[in-house]
Amino acid sequence: MNIPAVIGDVLWILALSIMAGASRMAWGKIGKDIKVPLLWSPSGATLWRAPRLVALALLPTFAFLISVYLLWGSRQMTGDLTVELIMLGLRATLAAILAVVHLTQVRRALNQLAAEGQIKL
Image: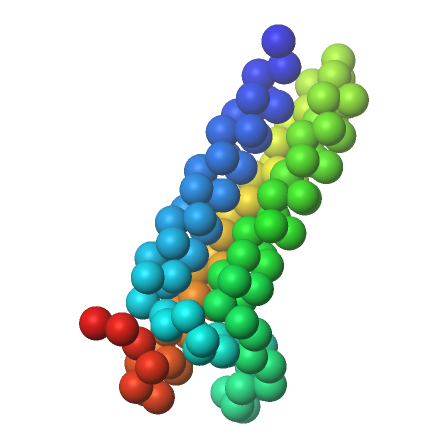
C-alpha cells in the first residue's frame, strides 16, 4: 500500500470538505438573485460578479478536478519513496493553498455583500 498517497487523499478530502462547508454556509446567507463578487482589483474594487452557484462552486470544482489528477499521478509513481514524498508535499501544499484561497474569497464576498446590505439574517 502507498501510505504517502493515502495521506495525500486524506488531506484533499479535508480541504474539499472545508471548501464545501464554507460554500454551504455562504449559500444560505446569499439571496437567490444576488450577484456575488468573485474578482477584485488590487485596489479593492470589484471587477467581476457572478451568479451565486458559479461564485460558490467554481473554485471547489476546480480543486476537485486537480485533486483527481494528482490522485491519478500519485498512484502512477509508486516504488520510489523520494518521488512519493515529493508528491505528498505537492498534494498537501496545493490542497491547503486552494482551501485558504476559497475561504478568503468567500469571506471577502460576504463582507462586501454585508456592506451593501444584501445578506440574509
